[in-house]
Image (cartoon, rainbow, N blue to C red; front, side):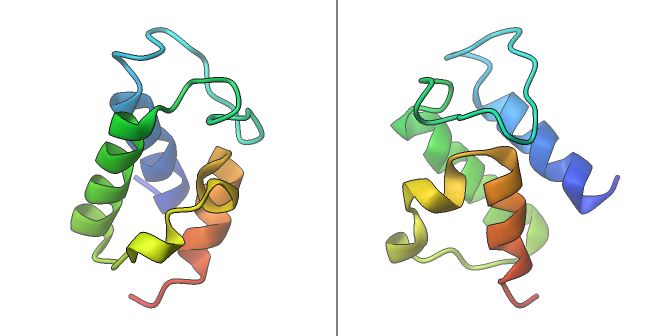
Length: 81
């Protein structure tokens, strides 16, 4: 699985309770549309940290970094692994 696929799968898994069956796209507004809530955001962050071996600081958990799948991918590209 590519990292791009992993990010999409991670977000889909995390939002199952909040938005079951939603077809996510790279530019879909996750936070503004209510697809990601605070709990699912923490699930996404935790899984990304664990499975990709990145450290995401509390100060980096900002809407601009997690607003879309594309934003999450761009944010992860800035993280050293």
